[in-house]
Length: 347
Image 1 (cartoon, helix red, strand yellow):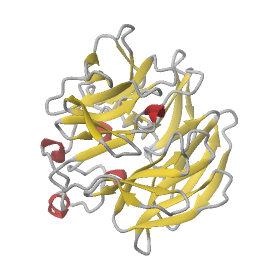
Image 2 (image 1 turned 30 degrees about the vertical axis):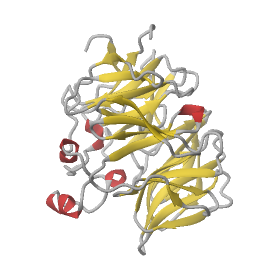
Image 3 (image 1 turned 120 degrees about the vertical axis):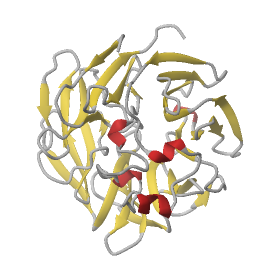
């Protein structure tokens, strides 16, 4: 692929962090990624210029898409626990432990508060939320599967989260009060991959596979940014551009201007983009998971999933910290690897 650079080259699954978090360290020298090269998913860094490889974790149960960088700290999930490690020293610390299966641990902008989706072993779903020092943790129940809880960038007492299946977009205060649905819709309107539109405080989301939309956080007014099959979406910090991959058809990775809806081509990914549900315009129902011999949703995927993944076959593009380049995943070589592309200079 012209204009892009392959960063990893091991015959195992290798992928950057999830697309809602940058894989680059703040100084831009290293890229955080997950690799299965030791037989289980573990966290590594690789020098962007040097190629120097460093293994950060070496134990079972690491959630492959859970890592998030805040300064020198990497927050991640392992075996029902929320952990933090130092990039400088490599030292690890358990923040909180739960009797259940956790989704990714999402920190607020400062890395003071953390939130993660949970399925309790004894039954029940929801979120757990607390401080990175291990204090003030609480369980916030929710009657359906929770996916991708995120803190509001300007008002971190608020958490936006996805309920699966529809209706999708919800919010709740981190003390568990004020829970409400932000947009009522049915399974036939495939709202997906919602996140905050940078530091605007508004939300941006896809109505797959037709629209990229913006929701005002206060008024809940929805407007269309572009009629486009934007798939996984990542806004820049100012909320002026949205980075996305595409599928059905896959026309590559693009940047979209939020104000005008115009788009600029970045590069091809040539990823295999697996998952039968992306051929449809509705959420997966129980019958879909039974057909795939699955009964869990995307944040607990297994290698045999055919409904929404496997996730490592999806590009999941994300900005570097300085927003000069992007990371993405491609299995065009036969196994999933980490790739980097420079962003176009002119908009």
